[in-house]
Image 1 (cartoon, rainbow, N blue to C red):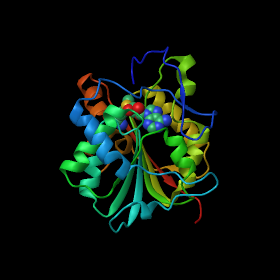
Image 2 (cartoon, rainbow, N blue to C red):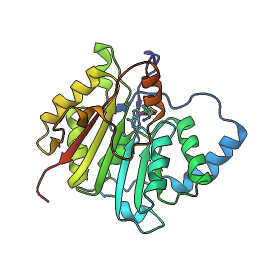
Image 3 (cartoon, helix red, strand yellow):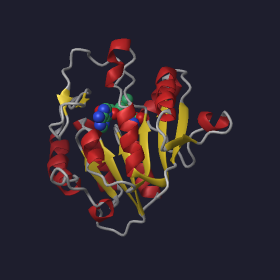
Length: 245
Ligand SMILES: C[S@@+](CC[C@H](N)C(=O)[O-])C[C@H]1O[C@@H](n2cnc3c(N)ncnc32)[C@H](O)[C@@H]1O
């Protein structure tokens, strides 16, 4: 998050893979007893269990209801976008990744209050989950307002890299979409440069409105609301997976 303490040590993700690390906060304000209870009661039921190394998940089978396709949201924050999408698309299974426990508990509350049955949670670094997904298994991947890490020396912490885009392209089915939003122009340019180097991703924009206008059916996110209130103008990038099936 913006203004995050630089001294926070990186914590490695769930795979023991030291190459990438999760750099953000896992905890914010102390959880209230009701939130602790919700976490203990609901998270084990909704949490994705990763398979043994070398094996892959079967994403549709993670959900207890019939699912037509599966989407992934990386860094869902408080889960406002994820919950709205899950409610609007009950036959879509949505896996949300977010290691920040206070955000996870907010999503769990929405899942409970809206009786959502098409949501699953991975409360660790998204990199570990991506590695456990089979090729061409998702219809959509969202990365919305990722931590900008604005200082030059911090930029290697950004979630978008050549390697992460290659993974996102691998798990998307042909014709599937990667949707990225950010209010930080430098991060938008950073992502466009790396996506242009990824042969399996094609930026779909044809006119400026295609990146200035939010995605269709867009419920917004908490970070977007902050950006707009501060007078920043977000960009919305859609990339299509273009490899042959
Ligand atoms: C700036 S916040 C944006 C939250 C939300 N998408 C929104 O727009 O309101 C970025 C979020 O990404 C999460 N995040 C950062 N690195 C991550 C990673 N490697 N895997 C999953 N989530 C990550 C952070 O914990 C944080 O909640």
